[in-house]
Image 1 (spheres, rainbow, N blue to C red):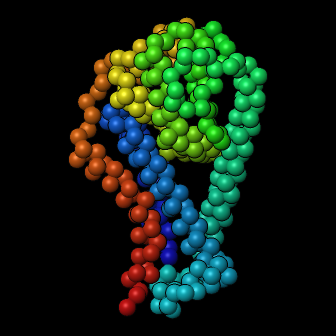
Image 2: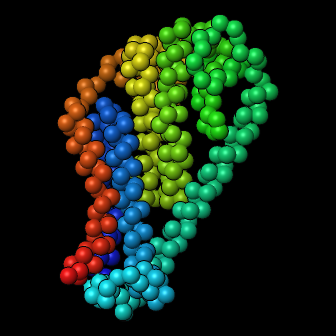
Length: 312
């Protein structure tokens, strides 16, 4: 059991510290944001699985009731292979730390979801008070669309039940039909991929564990990659140039495209759309996705290895 806990700790530390730093310096995530999001999620899943399985083993070693429940259906040889009869002091300390971390993570996730729901409720009430009737002449089939009386062009997606697209009258007046289609396709890309749940998860982990490099980078990269992914969705339907021009029109009045310090991502998105980077071929994309999917299996294999070797 001590050997399993040490291996799980090594895997968790490796996935939480050096690997994210290497991944943030890589260039390929800009070309394949969807694959990059999948890789980040697999890294986070690996660390969480390491902690959960280590917590289960530690609790089984420290508490006899937990051990009886976890290993009730297992043969005696399997229980003996884990050597749970005597728990060392460091195992007890590790179990308490992991249990505290699990409770803190659950609390952070719950707080983030409650706060997000509260913000959406206030925003929906505020927007409905300001929204005029839908202008005549808009093409049909755009889904739930709320038009907001506002001179500045803007558009965004508000998750909820049901999700809603919001566009200002300034955007309707300033954008061409193709540019407006690109903007709404971008926002629908967020809705279809359920990026709001990914953003909530990354924000909660980064808030709860700000000193863990994986969670800090996961939050930062998630906010960046979901925008690149939605840009790709819009550019495949409406073209790279149209999507770039729509992005410029929506943000030009803010002057953010010229402010490299505070809004660097907007400039990067426009440059990326005007000069699309070469994408990975299907084979490399499939290999990267499959390799990332196998990483979370490592803590499970480490945890079940003693039981599997003890089976006849």
